[in-house]
Length: 213
Image (tube, rainbow, N blue to C red):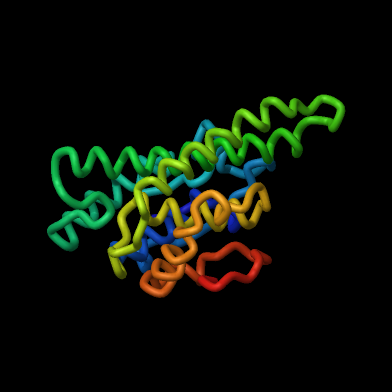
């Protein structure tokens, strides 16, 4: 397997951690991708030109959720059980909904980054930025109401992995202080980082110091 991604990408980081959790890191090499470079063959591998993209023999898998589903199949073959999406029936659907929520939060945050990166300052739309960040703050309010406590040890679920990567990404981009919205997530992050071996090695460069990093 070959993973095309970049160091700052929270989505690519999710895939790296998930691969480690299911015991497949040794079977996956990572090749850096530049989504802004028209000469990067990522655009031939994935017509969307997006990361992460996973090359598996003749198959090319994207996006993060599809890669997680593939890893789930590998987990069933290797361990006889699902690690990323444990349980059955509605338990799995609820886990995938939690994953979708975190990915939606990240999508909103990335649109905010793009607004400043690709638009001249005089063309930026403040109401658009506010609209995107409201998605994030509403999601944090929902997470807060769930009273999050990390309890999965060295076997985090898909949404656990995604949430840890998202919180670090919001810190990395300095978009908002998520501790203001859900203070209990600081303890959650400490417990996650202590339990998940691939958490710290996959941190983006130059991210601010925190108790869990």
